[in-house]
Image (cartoon, rainbow, N blue to C red):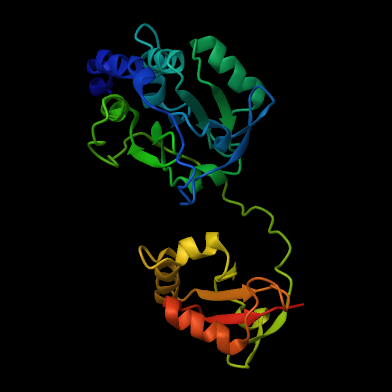
Length: 300
């Protein structure tokens, strides 16, 4: 933990400069962004996507873990100082507890609120991830561990909290992030071992593809399946298939290499934009270089 203590002044200086960063969101950026909704110890539901346009720090905590306590304990209170400096300049700081119920470090809302008060910690919110879904989404293994998200919603840093100052300082000055990830040391997170209840099964359907073959969704039971609705005349679809970057074509090829079934489905009615006959669809896919497992016709 010594590197954190030595570099605290740099961390604070970097955070205080955050006001100079442009926080505009690129409306044309169509890449998927991480999102989640978790209940906070304040009783409110917090959604990550509401903070787009701001720098966001996600900090995983377990106050029963010695390395975490070392960062929060008096008189240094390293993390509290970082949180205050960050929030003063508009940075969103979300503490997350992904420890399963019954495990050391798990917090109830009342316990979480009491811990923040006792330590004088002031994150934007303390969130409870009892199922571990969010921790697993971000592939977090230890506490303390952090993720830093840019104003566009991209994860720009993965690693220990002792490197936050370097990442944020680079960001404030417009320089490239010096590293995307760093090793983490701490207490392994005790995730829930039971599997969350499964949702209803995907509804069965039967459709013909552009070769005339009948395709049933249940034929692919046991495999990952992607259902992609397409309309090759739609400008938003055209953007993803454009020859300049071929986003969807690359994804389809990657899926095929990993044994994933990719079914493109056209539900445009006859006479409406995007409707194609089998021959027209085959010709368009050949022109675009699209390679789904099958293109299914769903005019009804």
